[in-house]
Image (tube, rainbow, N blue to C red; front, side, top):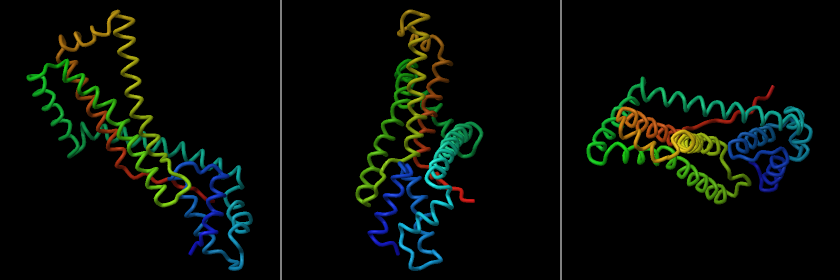
Length: 231
């Protein structure tokens, strides 16, 4: 059982090696705590154990930072890969494809009542605004939960990756509308006229915007594990 003083020593060590996200922190904390509890020399204190056992096994402070950097890149790749898998499932996976069918049905019904321009705008708002806002809310919940548990690290690597993914859609859409509407047509309002005059285009974009938002929201529910590889 780790005492409060030992807990503080581990916290200090993790801050020094750059464990800035809860996933990294928890994985390294568990590694250090388990190593200490299973130490061969039972009289060895936590500070000595970290210096003489944990750090050498992980390649020293520099080695640990390299591990964190490498595994963070792998973690990001895993999240983006999962995003692509989720998106594909909406078209070829069961029962996820039902969400796509339902989305198309909602857009078609909405088009009859409010028009394709309004539906596309609504889909755009949901697809590129809801995920970042909910991710920020998730970050706040992580922070409050970390404060409640008295953790020294409260930011989530997963949430940061997801918010980058979600805001990418926002940025891409804004830039596209500016370039296409502002620079080519000279008026961003012509984009909406184009959508109204081309219902299939408006329908397709509406579905893509909504599914993009759904992918982002589903990523927030996924469990991703940050693994520290130890040779």
